[in-house]
Image (cartoon, rainbow, N blue to C red; front, side, top):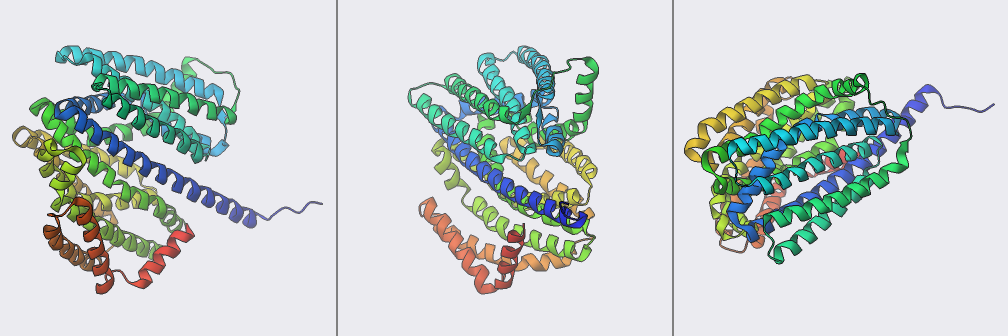
Length: 489
């Protein structure tokens, strides 16, 4: 008779396998996200240098406007696919066709509404804005394919496709810019690279697809739409929280101001990737402690995480605020010096942004996703209201201030729900040492900003790390604990 593992042994084996897959996929996805962001910043910087603020403003406005209309084709299907395919580890070809038909129908309607909007606005840039929107719509579909890869726990396939797109997009985009093509030519090249990437993704997906006839009936299609509706609500709230600033700025101040703000916001978005990467490592631990009802361990883990997020965020924020002008001119050229004031304000928002990642993670770990959705909606309302108040008089600075105000208020609201796990006084004592180290680094940066940017950044980082170790703000025991926690994951 064959001996089978007992229920407990089987459970531990399955949890260990799932944990290893999670770690492997998380590391791969974080790595490709970082590579993609870096290459995206390089591409954006080249656009700024070759095309100037006006065409960059058109590009930024087009992306923001297209991201509004692409909400319908996305409709939360990505999250739904990850949830369902994660249970079966196979892709049903019939469901793939059904979802594709729904996304295609939504895309046609949304694109038609987009063109009507441009006509009403009497836009003189219909061709280039249509190209940008076609690119965004196609990218939304390939993101759906990525969600299938994630549901299958095959992150390496997403890594290969995204690497192919990022490298080809940068290489062909640079060639187009050097050949003197302006924005329409560059976006057309992007669209071609994305089409090739989509074909590669579909080729990889074939290995994991089981053939099942599609049911293109109203009841079946409605079932898919209903299942994705809750995720669509979160997606809509996040869009309004992240994109409306650009649209309001474009309406009140025009394309050049949008270009300056887009340049600053691009760097801010990429810096927030640091917090996203840290949360990818700590979320499983937080969920495990909550599931085991270990409230003391949960609180200690949160306190440890928030302190070290501050350790990471404080020098980045201080460096961004102090070195905003050399950073802006280094990345985008001297013509983008007016983007520096907005970058300073966004830099100050980084600390709250990092802590908001931690707070969101805690609420998700304790099964409060509904609360995250409601708070995200409230944050979107605050962001839109702040932009409407500040942008007309302050322009791109107003949009940056609106982001800082929103991040601050969102953190205060989140912290109301975290106070049962973290005491404010204790947290302030935890971050006092790193705060002083950041102030010391900042004082030195005022001198180093006369030197080349690479020297200033390297010198500031060395001073900050030295101050942390000498002051005991981060002890050897904490460094050892951090390594153990990460190894545990």
